[in-house]
Length: 269
Image 1 (cartoon, rainbow, N blue to C red):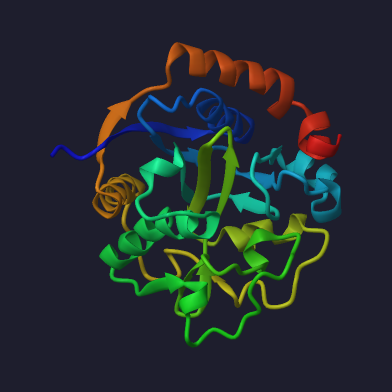
Image 2 (cartoon, one colour; image 1 turned 60 degrees about the vertical axis):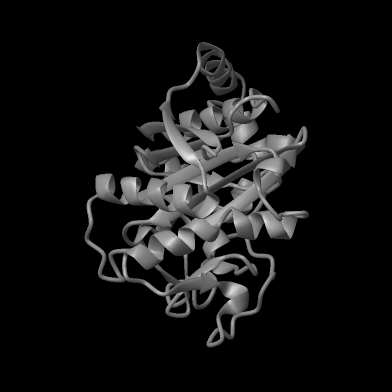
């Protein structure tokens, strides 16, 4: 039998508001009868994203970000503040039926982050989920205003340090997930903009450059797609945003992600 087909959409680097508008547009237009989607992208210029219900001003210095030309944008997923600098980012939209053996949220999250373990393994890195990190002594599930300062069971850990972050949301019987793969030290770049810095943040995180990986982003993007295809047993078919998806993304950019009222007020604003 032919493997199930997923749309592969590579939008390249976009600014923060546009990236989040495209992610939400893909979720809004997902149809149970249509092919699921894997999107790959980057961030240009660098940006901060805040969690869906997070109070951005409590975590980030808005004025300092404005002076530095760093956008602050709200995600449609929960969690804490993330700095998106030199990184490879993915998002996906599918239905629960597309994930074999994943009956609940925890199972689907593990199933949909397993390709990251394969990806890091192909780079010669021994990655595991935080819950399986025998050497780890970090408290799992503790709430923190900074995503990389916290650690959940299904976070990816290499050499005892968290790498990147992933978040999931379910809506309309659809699964939306996105996550980051830091290519270099974004945490160090972000420190001057935080209201406060949790102890051990630098020591508890890592990135590909720190791990000795110097591959170009084009090779990493291709490797990530191959790892996704192999682990989920799917065929990735190159695609583009449909006219309807583009129109919705443009509207969301105007109404939400391009406005401080949404990005700093969000679901509670």
